[in-house]
Image (cartoon, rainbow, N blue to C red; front, top):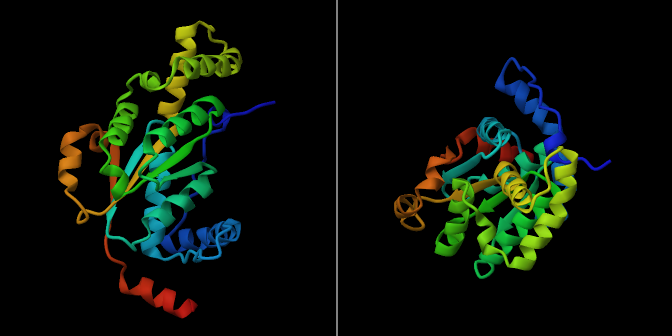
Length: 239
């Protein structure tokens, strides 16, 4: 039986008495996450108040359909690490848009994959990617609920419809051409979560939000301040 993220049961909350208890609960998953990484340059995640709070905020955001986040802070504050760890905890896929020359095509590929397999996916978007207007238009259209099938070829649209038939049968919906497209669009809106990891100092962030108001309208902000002293102390003591 093929199951998708739409079939997954709702998460239950675990109640903790203090943030220290939460940190203790995250320690083992953090070690498992580090062990799952294949890069030899990866650094273990050390749980402290600052990190745990940001992890919990992002977990809360991405639990909901059509949810997005803007992580605003300076480089080195752990934003991308938090996103990857939150995705690991939620069993979501992660896609990082680092090649600024293939952003549009990479976005199309993610939409095709996510819209067909029904897998929750976190898209990590950094400062450089946000400077690309075509890519920002793509993201804005997704977040606005626009028909983004216009960026696909007719062959791609036919394949989308063919691959969406199984999901239509599974959910008892009609298999008309237009309804199959609507199902595809609904899935990518529900399951793709865009997480912007941006610095307010690298470029004119305000212009980005003015030119693309959907980005801030449909996203939750999380501000990453410089690490507190106790975080540096914990890192130093672990070495």
